[in-house]
Image 1 (cartoon, rainbow, N blue to C red):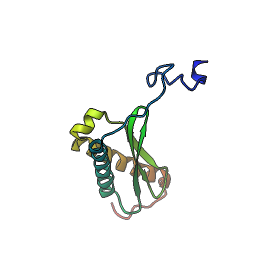
Image 2: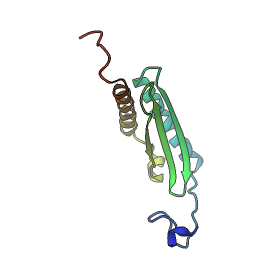
Image 3: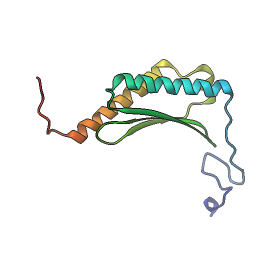
Length: 127
């Protein structure tokens, strides 16, 4: 019954009987997160042809900021990567290695979606 009350909260997020409060980011933290996400989007686009659509979304909830980067391939299902950085990580900035890993993973997953959607029905043009 505790989960049916507006104050019950999810386990590990908000204690029962406590109201949910959103985490506020400073201007510098918000800009740092926006730059990091824009870098991931740009890097992901550089790995893919123009027929792939790449976008991002920032949201702020009771558990802190969340960033999502998504790719819609020309065929197959869209893929996305979401992450919720710690406030301490935002101060130091998200590392280039982490951004590169997310971008490469998204590009590879999007390419795999196209390959799965197209199947083996395509004759290769070269060997």
